[in-house]
Amino acid sequence: MLIRYTDYFSASYQAARTKFRDAVNDAAGDFASYECPSGRGVEGEELAIDVGLVGNRHSPRQFVMISATHGLEGFAGAALQVAWLRNRIDPRLLGEIGIVLIHGLNPYGFSHGIRTTEDGVDLNRNFIDHTANAPDNELYRQIHPYLIADMADPAAWAQAQLALDHVRGTVGDDVLFDAIASGQYRHPDGIFYGGAARTWENRTLEEIVLLYAGRASKVAVIDWHTGIGAYGKPFFLAFADDESQEQMQAVKWWGQDNVVAARPHGRNRPRYKGLVFDGIRGFIPHAQVAGGVIEWGTRGPVAGEMAIRQDLWLRDYGHLLSSDAYAQMRADLLDSLNPVSYLWRNSVLSTGVEIMNATAQGLAAW
Image 1 (tube, one colour):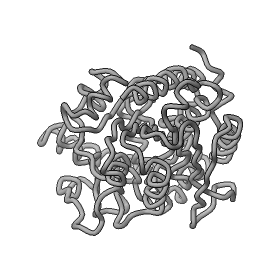
Image 2 (cartoon, rainbow, N blue to C red):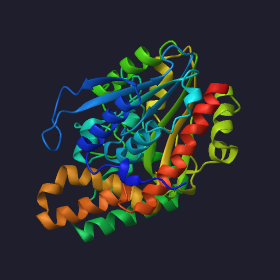
Image 3 (tube, rainbow, N blue to C red):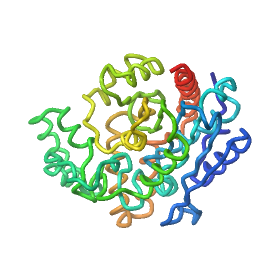
Image 4 (tube, rainbow, N blue to C red):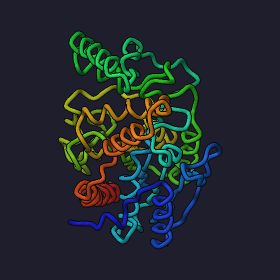
């Protein structure tokens, strides 16, 4: 199925937000907005988490779909939300399930083209118990200096890469990947930093989930991301206990191999901490919550992992670059997480619509 991507993708947060609001309105849905209390957009615009509501608000089955948890990655998820609203939701389902579309969960990052929040927090590692001792990540502490090496200094960068390769050779690729990607809470200037307290986005998501899905007994979740997987293809990270009902539901929706055998970049899955999905389960502990993250593959593991480091390096040191060098690195970062190719966008939309329909139908039958 070929979809006219230009109707749904956007080139800016502000344009994406307008398309989303218009699509909710045209679908006769309800709309709510939660204004960000700090910061403005890159164009000086207001920032907000927007919520579109369609279907049966009182159903015990609610489908929560999120875009832009990682800011810059939000363009694909936002386009999918709009595409689905534009007359692609099976109308027979609307009486059976409620649909809660959360647009721009990290609006600052979405607008400014960064993965983190304004304070440098990786929102998808922020959903831990911040009243307890922060999880420890000793190996990350050791490799932290290499991960924030100066990208503008070829010698320093090469030395850092050699050091990481040495660690990889010592502990193994899976262990190193786990230390990097699972989340850390000691180094605000580092990658996958989960923060020292709940962010505004975290607290606002709780308010949204309790208000619009708080009475549900069965909840499906898709949190759209980009960067892992084959080019233009979905990669599934379902989160549930092995052989649980929630895992079995995700298998029905997304397939056994996608749910059970998924290996990010061919590695063992990291022991992720503080995920948005964890937060949702914690907000509504009485409900069965199935689903998780769906990534869209871009340029492979090297570019995807480089983008995470580029993102933070540009935030902290981009001002030291010439305007041309800064623009080049920004363009590379954008293409690593939101490719400009219409081939990629059409693949995302055509496959993504099928995934949303399968999830909605599966939830209705659960």
